Image (tube, rainbow, N blue to C red):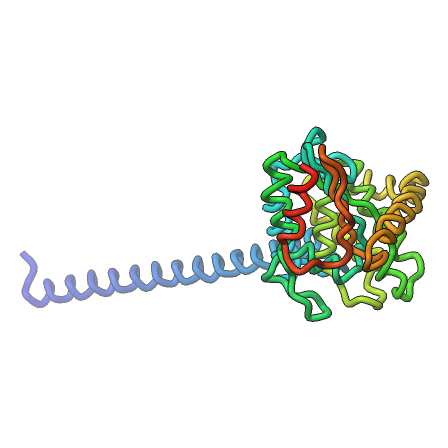
Length: 282
């Protein structure tokens, strides 16, 4: 039988062994934690790099403005059929035709929600959103976009109007023209500046869900899309000339079973002007 002294020495040896084992275990845990932290940091860096390379563009990238615009436009147009420059059911009894210039800041006011302020410090009206929600989505009307040059004439790049409008039409060949139109209105630059670059237009296209980008790039070269601009512009000028305000954008013409409204050029006193015109022709 071990003596009292031997028992104490055995207990002390056991305690020291346990402490050493615990210290080694703690050291292993710390090494694992440090290794795990390094891996986690590497993953974050890789994910960020992928996000930048795949989502970013020389357009506004994934800025807060771009993200808000994409979310708003996707929600506004979700589930509504599109064909070329037409948004809504083809057999809708009312046709609302908008003659517009995608650089026009007044068109921008019509097209954007009240929460939006454009580079000219003009607040959106939300009226086009209401027309889409109350009339197009419900099948009462279809909305047609036709090009008419106004604001783009002050762009230092003389080709900007053609480039931007054809870009929208090319998206229309895939049933996405109104996505492009609304995204550009919600992400306009300042009027009279050279912001409509190739990277800007490509950036908008990349924000459109389901758009075949390669096909869009090829379709932009189609001569018939450019030729359509001249036809649309002449029709828009003719429509506006019959208005007391003269030709300008936006020009809205509403047609229905009971006839055609007088063109509404620029912004009317209120949304009720569109409702009244729809009721008169429908």
